[in-house]
Image 1 (tube, one colour):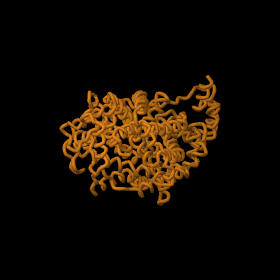
Image 2 (tube, helix red, strand yellow):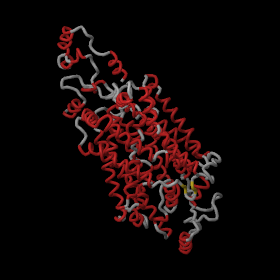
Image 3 (tube, helix red, strand yellow):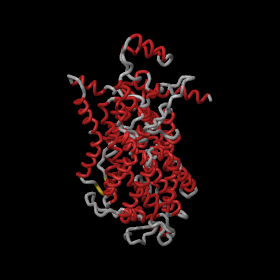
Image 4 (cartoon, one colour):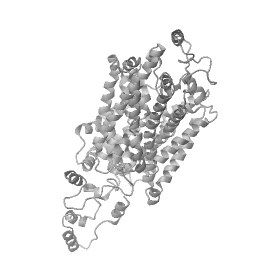
Length: 633
């Protein structure tokens, strides 16, 4: 009972008064807080936790890498996560609608939409490849186990071909150590059969029909899970966000029981403290935190916008951020225990079999699985885990785009037809992903991954911090959070938002520029024209910000440029909480000056206040336009 009373007070209700509604009937809300947390965990925990973090940790000093990693989590990851959650929750709007806070910066929202579009296109192609491997694993013998297949070359050397004896294993070790590159059956299956890889990014070749079919399956699954927006996806995440941890645990238990697993884990964790002084290690730590949490994609703002107004997003941000990072560390144990076993079986160093990105997920790890008894079972589990990790992120990417479109149009018709908007976005995403299923598709996929969502995210996030803290004003934003949560943001977060986090974001940007290397895929070096396209993709999201700012300044009122700038950056009249019940204080509906003083006592004595107002002057009560805005909101 006490909890209900405190909840009512937090919601703005007065004891004895009728409780206020905290749900947006028109727009919808999460069924409960657990749905939001699980969705956000599924969004933040993605494929990068499995195929990028363990490799980064191994490459940057093992256990020593954990130190800068958690430093960046505390001073950059969690503060930015909390900022985006609170931003979306306060306004109950997607990545476009929230920029009523400072309309000139609405281009930041469009930039987020562009980034989410790029990621959504290629991310689902990765999921479709995982679907393909999942389906072909349903067999007695995994198709990449031996070198006796039509697609194999004479250079193929399988770890199980012809029941390798110790002498053959010795010959294999010698082969690995020579200049001649050994090609494994899993690598040839990946390159020569699944992808049928062309020799150049410009040579698209034919569409790989099995991949095209799996791409259709993945988009159908995403659409069906989002067919009713957060009402349906909120139920699906109970499975998609939790089952990967079950699979990780199963693979971990199996991995650590294998011979050589301890060697692999030691390679993963052994601290090399001398590397802490290397700026590249800190740059990798900051970048991994920033990118893995999904900051500046627009997804965090979108997911939080479906929260109830008084939800404790401060607590949620800490829980979700720590869960994301703990998952990365845990996945490292799973990956390197198996890789250590494989290295021990081959008699080579762990570094010879360690890889990251698609090379880990579709070449190194699958080959290691062929050494296990009942290998199809472990392969099915592994790729099912990848599918679920990918879908959790893909749900939010698609919902980000759909929510932004629906909120921007904002009329009753499009809200009722939201399912058709979701279908339209899904169909468009499928069609745009078709080129990535061609023989040159992997080249384009990696190009988008390296450029479309790299330094542009850093720029977007930095401008968002500046716009909220310095244009809208940190004091205003702190008061907004206090109004929403019942307490102001802790001093630590206030300092991080204003100074430390923007400085770290700027450091990431500088690091990204300094460490830039032209993209390559194995021995293939991308041509200049392809890299130019990559830069254009990166700029296409950032360029939205100045273009929209110029447009807004030109359309704003004012005789001088300074006046136009002030009007363009000033918060809109409809900025603030979406529900009228929460619009109090400076967000209360605007009234005429002659009646404003009388309305101060209306909540306590409404009848007396009305009679006094009538006696004082015949002026009408409230501004009609303000009422029309409230009803629309």
